Amino acid sequence: MRGRVGRLKAHLVKLRYNVAEWWRWWTLFSKDMPKVKQFVRNVSYHDGPRNKQKMLDIIVPDIEGPLPVMIYIHGGAWMLFGKDIYTRTCKTFANNGCIVFNINYRLGPKHTYPIPMLDVAEAVQWVCKHAAEYGGDPQNIFLAGDSAGAHLASLYASALVDKELPGLIGLGELIPLHCIKGLILFYGAFDFDTLVRTDANHIDVFVDSFLGSEPVIRERRVAHASPLRHVENGYPPSLIIAGEADVLYTESTAFAEKLEFKNILHKRLFFTQEEHPDAGHCFLNYHKRRCVQVALREITGFINEHKQN
View 1 (tube, rainbow, N blue to C red):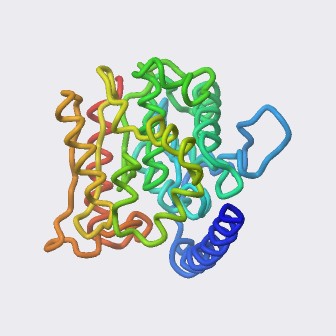
View 2 (tube, rainbow, N blue to C red):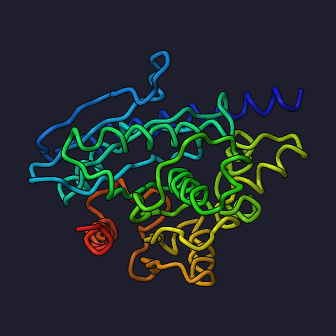
């Protein structure tokens, strides 16, 4: 009964958030889209039956290639939203000098851990094989994401450096570590034990939807699914972006401290409450905010610094 009630609550929360976000997309995010050379929608990255949650969009700027590749993993607490809400953002990334692959993945509460991670790994594999067809350099891949997407990007990188982790998660073939030139992580979740102690709205619903609520299974999944616990030598250079106004801000600061402790090359872009009070959670899609413009400049510089020429 408890599980059934939890799933019902998750579905109701999902409906509420999705309606609100699609309204923002219709009224704000979809207006005056940046122009690009090529925009290919809903390409399947899955070899099996067609599944709308296992698709990606390809965004090619009017810039001579080959160009670095960005694989963007959307946020949404592992159960909300989708790639379409991030079209404007990804077109902007592309026009700053990347081929962008904006991916979907299966969501909770129907699909729990590790399914979203398995989908991300499958999408990354597909992009590595096909990037050159669109002018991208598969030796120059940057994984990027916000919130839950930042979690999945960082966990994929952890699986490349912690050799036991792929087996624990159930991952198949991964691309070579040297192909990942960097991570771009907006206000992510990096350790589930600390995440559930934040004041984020409905955090218990989101985490239960992702990891499950059965104590023994959940404890094991927390250990596997927390990227902060799997940072090892060779972890890719990382750009960590968050604001003090974000309810998950301490997740980003703790992850940055772990990278510092492990001597992993990284850069922090942390917005103060005083200078950027609007840099709260999910600020990335609000393209007119000054913090977004600052972040875009930092991302361009980060990619240019770490890409292989």
